[in-house]
Structures are given as structure tokens and as C-alpha cells.
Amino acid sequence: MSFSSVKALLSQYSPVSESSFSDSEKEAHLPLGHSKDLEIASGDDFASSSSSSPSAAGAAVCNSRAEKKPFIDARVISDAIIGLSDGMTVPFALTAGLSTLDDTKVVVFGGLAELIAGAISMGLGGYLGAKSEEESYHATLKKTREQTLTDFDATTTIIADIFEPYDLPAQIVSDLTKHLIDSPKLSSFLMNFHHTLPEPSGSRAVTCALTIALGYFIGGFVPLVPYFFVGPQDAFSALKWSIATMAVALFLFGYCKTCFVSGWKGRENVKGGVYGGVQMVIVGGVAAGAAMGLVKLFQTLASQ
Image 1: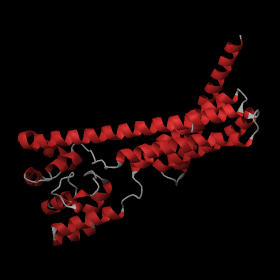
Image 2 (image 1 turned 90 degrees about the horizontal axis):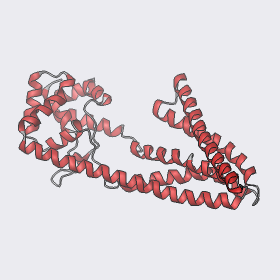
Image 3 (image 1 turned 60 degrees about the horizontal axis):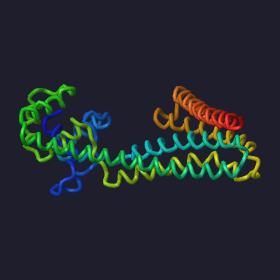
Image 4 (image 1 turned 90 degrees about the vertical axis):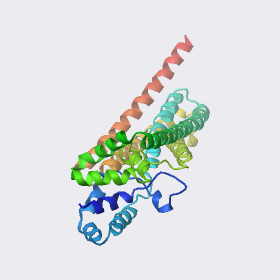
């Protein structure tokens, strides 16, 4: 790979938010070692583009990256999984425990109260976590900018360390280092490839809070559904339907969560999905059993 090709590839990585930067410089951050980008950079298309001009090579990489941009942010999916995981275990355990009182109203009102309080608590936790992530990013960015202005030797060493795993010729590394030292995008380069911190979206905290809270509420509402269709004193009967419903829901959730990460096709992926589903059923069952046992214990102690 020639120096001009490497420079063109690096030039497409976005800088951090600065008023002087254009919109095209605010694309999604990707690590230099990203396998797909390396395949593009070493493929025939990239080679033919780089032979004509570095900007054409960079455009080819940028266009391919845009085509493969995921429809849903991976962090949103992670937040949804967190909310659903807690929502499908904690409220289920609570309703199972309250069912031993055999009072449907107590189960429904107690379950709804826990759902609302839990969703608010989980949402606030997600919001504060995302805000802390944003503050950490900006603090790191400030230190990085100060370092690039005051410590030339350390900055040069960091740049060389970034390129070391890629086995580039020494002359290319030297030329790239000189180019980056004088580049206004140096802080962006270090944030992407040294600190590996993507710039958080301005709406990240709100999105995280809403996703986790909604996931928790939806997951926790499933075990409550059977209690809306039984009599006031039939809570224990509804518990049987709730257990059956949650066993299926927990298995499907565990299966889908595992396969979403590892893949949907192939014998090993299916086995992994089944294992993940069974694991979720066991976790939910243990939580529900513990809650029921504690309520029974408290009832026994109170009656003595």
C-alpha cells in the first residue's frame, strides 16, 4: 500500500466536533484495523482508485462504509437487551412471590408499581451512565488536545505505536507521522485510534434512558398479563399461566439474544442459542422461586 493510499484512507476518518469542520468530516468513527475496511483497502477496487488519485481511493472507502452502515445503532440494541433482561426476571419474581398471597389485586397493583418504579430507575441509570460517558469523552478530548500542543515527543511516540501492529514500512510511518503532526485532525485521529472513543451523539443519553426504561416495562409486563383474566382470589391459578408464558418468553429472548451476537445459521449457532435460552429460563426460574420462598417464609413467621 503506497503512502498516498494510506493517507487517503486515514483522511476519511472523521474529526471530533469543531465548528471549522465540514459535515462530511463528521462520519461514524471506525478503528483502523476494521477487517472490512482493510479488505476494501487491499482489494482491486481500492487499488484501481488509488492509482488514479488518493481522493478517489478515500471516496471508495467512504462510499462502501456508508452502504454497510447498520440500520440500528449497536448501543441501542445493547440498551434494549439490558432493559429486557432485567424486566423479564425481576418483575416476574415479584409477581410470583405476591401470588402466594392469592390476591389478584395485590399482584396486579404491586406488579404495576414495581414496573413503573423499576422503569424510571433503570432509565435514570442509563441516562446518568450515558452522560458520564459523554463527560469522559470530552475530558479525554481536552487532555488529548493539550498533549498535542505541549508534548511533541509523546505524541510522536503514540502515533508510531498506533501504526506498529500493521507492519508498515518505516518511511511510510515517518511520513504519516509528519503529516498528522501538522494536521488539524490530529486530535480526532488520536481519539479514534489511540483512545478508541467514538464521539457520543448529542441525544445518546435520552435515547439510552428511553430504550432501557421501555425494554424494562415491556419485559416486566408480560408476566402480569394472565392476572388480568382471573378472579380476585385466583392469583395462584394465574401464576401457572404466568410461569408458562414467561418460560416461553425467557427462552425466546435468550435464544434471540445469543443468536443476534453469534449468528442465526449453522449448527453451532443454533446450539448456542438453545443454551442461551435455557440459561435465561433457569435464571428467571431461580429468581421467581427465591421470591416465592421468601414470601412463604415471611407468611409463616408472621402467623406465629
